[in-house]
Length: 302
Length: 257
Image (cartoon, rainbow over all chains, first blue to last red; front, top):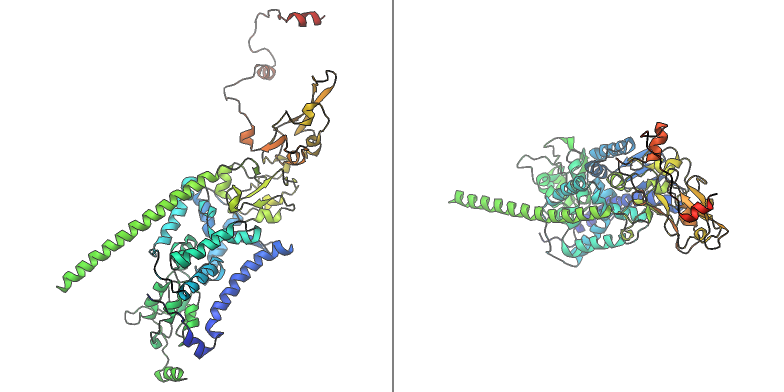
């Protein structure tokens, strides 16, 4: 699909620049905020949060552990202690509410890198390259667990760029910046949205978790859609949009309930007609609230 | 006619799906092979890299450590660090190099307390029971004490002084009249903290902490040492053995009376 070069122009015109970048700005704030929480400790000597994204201890009381990494240790034959188990359960519970891949869009630092690569890719008009099926990441996820089982080593963490870069920023980067650069170039030159959108097993894990998540984006005013395609242009997982946005005729609800949706909220930002909204998946299977035609026309005319 | 078309489309879709799946499976399979190779290679840790107290065997440690760095955060000394990509140790795992900064053997063992997964065993409550490795006097040719000098630094910095390293007297054959004080490590007391290696005054340490499995030998299970068995039993194992007179070398026989 030829993506639009400057999606969201209409939104900026009707809503203003800040409103048209609201969720994007909040997301960046969140990503850098989490990173800052971890980095303050080693930099100042005063620890709010200890550890890293793999496992942490907040204010010396709240343990949090990445359930995917814990799953790898289980596959490798280790029975973890209570602290790690409780930490992982808390994390699972949180993502079951806010949406699994909220991890990808709101926490993971790699997202900043691959988003930047995509931004540049569109501006430099780079097309084509390596294509992966959307199922590839689930294969990779399975592979990481099989390798952990066969070798008895938490193997993916030897190469996982997500934890590597996070760990590097807290405990000393070394050559880990090379991994960041490699991912940037991979997404820029080799495969469009290749890493986060197709290959990363961390995203696959959280996406699987997110299939049951409560907090979702809903195309609640989908009847007003004027097919401008801006949301498609910015969506990192375009396949999740059609069922919710165009599902009125087939009776599919307006809630985007695909696990792959990262709840990044960029579709909400760029839509000049405010069709999308954050909400609960229990908003009802076919509940769409259509604003009156006059209301819609007034808005367009304005 | 139309039906025929859909049938063809269906077959095409099916073929595309199968081709895509096969392609993905092959790609991911090959990546998995490379990853498995990397994981296997990661098991051979460099000799100089020591694990924190309570880490146990390397294979078990690599299956349990999630590389979070909580042990590093709670280490009050600049001892522990997490392996970087270029470090030759499994990426992200905690380790220390004794020659640079040894383990200070904290009484409360904060690194073990911090570990959320059990990669560092909470069963370790007395730091004297830690076995991070085993000190070995690897080079008698350069060790100053072996030259008959009184260096003794490794002996004196040892936190388990007098137990993990003792000084054993040996005649100094060079001078013919002095004693050499030979630093001797005892595995039942050495924690592998690395203080001796760190303190060795030589340019390259003559005493080094090695992984226990490299440093230690192991007696065959069937092997019995006669004098120990005798001691255990309290008497000779076989009675009525004719004790023949000892034949000493002439010089010894002359010296004896």
